[in-house]
Amino acid sequence: MAKDETLLETLQRRGISRRSFLKFCASTASLMALPPAMIPAVAQALEQARRPSVIWLSFQECTGCTESLTRSHSPTVEGLIFDAISLDYHHTLQAASGHAAEAARMAAMEENHGNYLVVVDGSIPTANPGYSTIAGISNRDMLLETARGAAAIISVGTCAAFGGIPHARPNPTGAVAVSDLVTDKPIINISGCPPIPVVISGVLTHFLTFGTLPALDELGRPLAFFGQSIHDRCYRRPFYDKGLFAESFDDEGAKKGWCLYKLGCKGPTSFNACATAKWNSGTSFPIQSGHPCLGCSEPDFWDSGGFYKPLSTPTEDIGATLVYGAAAGAAAGVALGALNQARKRRAQQAHEPVTVDDLEKGGGQ
Image (cartoon, rainbow, N blue to C red; front, side, top):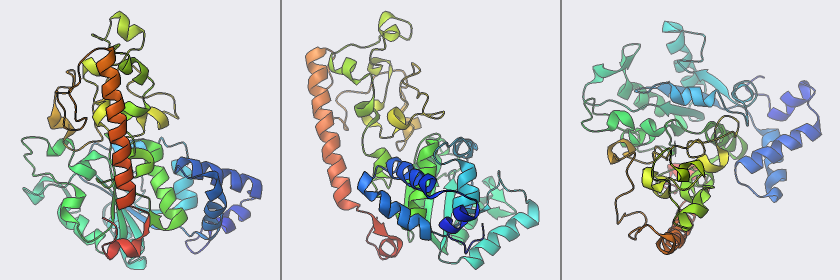
């Protein structure tokens, strides 16, 4: 697919039927939490869409975010790279190396100035530029140079979004998030350690479809995926409301699928789509596998500690002391649900979808 060829023209050239195209549009609308009435708008936008250039920068990271992207099933990473976007630079996935790789990044920046997307995974060290360099360029300098001509930046993973594990105390590298350094560009945070595959590809598809960033919460995360807590969507929630908790990983409560709150589950204060989108093509997620949520999509999750201890009480996020027992569990559940709904309404009012131009004028974040 040529960069100046529309997606519809590419599909027609490949013999894809209109019916199959509309099915893809319907699944895309569902992925982005859009109502069925929006399917025609998605189809119209995709028919005229052209592949945006994407430059993917990897800094202080473990490659887990890229590994997550390669496991996306809706849409697949192959479909994204070959049909939807022009992935012009990515350390792990590109064939080029050395001078050729850096030449590809510079060419993408020059040819698509003002229109390309920058995807970043990993935190940026600031204590000493030598802690992490690429082609002799410090992570900080490469980020600022590449972001200068970008239309928007997508921070993939908690390290890029909030500093992540490198930012944890005592933070020897002076690790910071992308938003700590880049303040004049629209930024969307897709947190998680690693983030959910379909959330990464879904946000890229949203930008391709509408040319805008989706509605964001107060931490710059897409509301479609981070609008509710894991606790609210968890299939174990009824047990929490009844005051039925597993006391250890191998007791009768654990075997019966009771709530993992007492074993340190951070679901009540963590916002992500793990309980609905799940992992491995929608097969499972940590809580379904018997492990409490670690809260990895939240800022400073590593320093919050107590992975196998209950949340401290009272908690700032819940706003009420959680006392074990059926009545207290139900009351806290209702209060938490109301708090989450109010939080979602505030975020929606503050972060309606806007164009990149609006965001750059200060209308977004």
